[in-house]
Image (tube, rainbow, N blue to C red; front, side, top):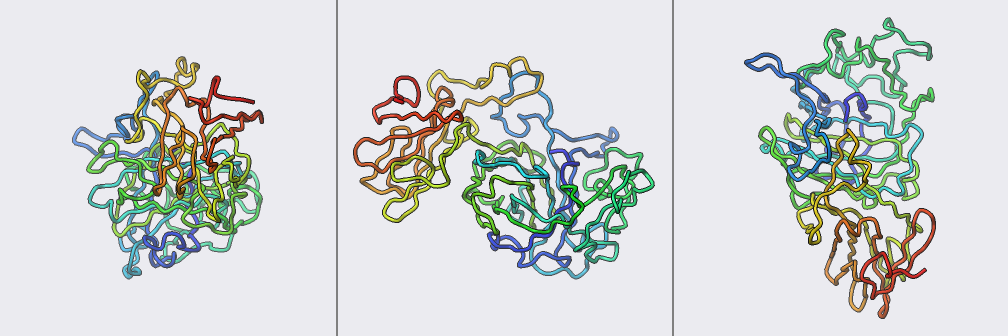
Length: 446
């Protein structure tokens, strides 16, 4: 969550999948000003105080850390409406919510996300502004053409590859001229700026080589192929909301878990594109000036490999086709961070890897296990005992830490003896009969 890993993002080309929260278009008339920082200073009666990382318990009181506890980096984002921008304010903004985007390069040449199931993060917003603040998350290959506003209030550099050294050569301090002509200049003698100071993200005189060329191929790549997820922060009934966490400065952290294979919108992508994920873009949308704090942003996956993008009637993988209907079966984590989780008797929070006990780095260690979630199943369809796929809209069960290293079962539509096939990374397959008490030990037959 270091601020230097985030760059000013491109304007989303469409509001598809986010029509209920986003403006109908993204341009300079409704562009907000955004400042992102992992450290900032605040003036107090005792003098200037520096703030930055938060201890795990400040984010979530249910987090348990093995070993030495250290502050974790968080990202503070300050959003100002067009009429309140410090640089080139717009006295006549378009009606409706304003927006601003930042982009993180996950892998310049793409990363395989086929074993990644969820994006999990905490976000905190002031309680008075939580209902008017939302996040639009785009994951995939995104445009490098950052949307910046110059000192005259006009879009700058659109369609051009903006970089301080053009053509590329050895960069030096004399080349630190900045991008986009925003009229913003950093102070080389200042390492930590006050909260919301636009100089914190200025490209001029910041001591860094700035460029829009995220993959360093010398070409402006403006093609967009992405999966989109819309997080309504103020809606506790939303599909991604898990629960509330610790309070902080008039607000409260909220935990969200986003299933990557159920996007709200897909822009020119299919599941195959999860093999080549490059960027993560966050677009904050709000009706008023606001501040957000993002913490513990991480991708969650499974050590089990899927046999394919779609399953068969016997329930081998994540979907089944029954009577012409697709039945999604999701396998993901559940732990003491989830309100509905109850660990097995005698199982407490513990480190999952013994080597973590001597590590100087803190590691979160909640009691956890696999969770299988099924939907749209109807009688007389049956399932394995470890996946309670009832006839209602959805049902899920979880197993404790003792089962975490075994297998996550999927449902079967067979009327008699339901079976589950798990594929280990070594490609060995194990078959479990319905009478087995667990996914390990004597319950398996090769």
